Length: 386
Image (tube, rainbow, N blue to C red; front, top):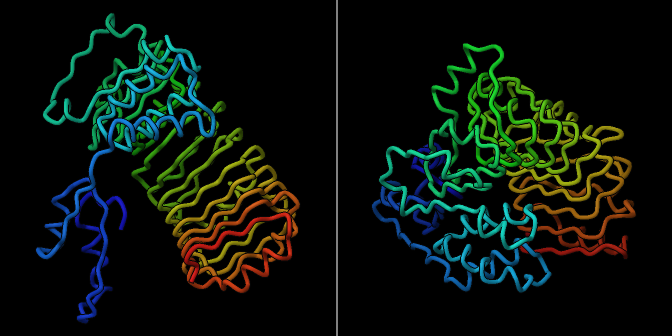
């Protein structure tokens, strides 16, 4: 069980794992070491070591520059930034995501990046920020694992471009009150990316409407309502952790290029909405349950999709056509235990280059290899598929 914050998920599931003396083990990953001891007094807790400064820099370099070398003029500042992450892989990845979308100039990296370390915020209760002292600030990363209230001042800083909360951020009570009482409510900003923002009701969405320049957004939705993000006309990348998509539909920005959905019960109608996004190139579905455990794609769906990943998705049957994914280049299937077959028709997609299969118990290795032989221009990788 990955990224467990408390024992409640385990309390809900453990009745399905009777103690039959078979010496089986349950593996948790968590940022809270108390979770293990609370789950069971016999837990073996193995703290992971922090990354070294060299490992931090190598991770940052690979995330920002991919297979290319870091320009000489950015080496020193890049290593300073990675060192400020204090060995935390998640902090490195978040910072790298910001730097990858910034202009690769030393003065921008040097002057406009601020990382607030976990060590400095553990006991923080109040933070007062002078507007004058932050006039040139372009990026703020709050490296704290619990949810925090977003100071109103941050939403009105014209220079700020990137705002990231590792544990999630929610709009302040004063901001919500102003948005509720004032029909012409506005905030002035030029934010281009926010993660992770917590959305609980329509008032939160009203505030989000005041951020028209957003290009990248990560959202955690906390209530089962019909939400619309269509107003974010410039948004290109969206990661959503919905409350429950079975009880409502989410309208998505028409210009979206990348979409990640985490932990949702997915209706076929919602998948049709996603499939009609004309510019969508990357789709990742993680811990998603498909309605009735099957997915029937619609004609004309996913016209520009190049990368599709299904990870821990509850699906048994997938029916599609090569016409539905005409530009698909890469398909990744990971821990889709119920999936019995990859649609053979996918082998007719000329653009398909690679299929990766990880730990999909019901997918036959023989069938997968035969699928790969029928398309000699495509690479097939099978890792522990059965």
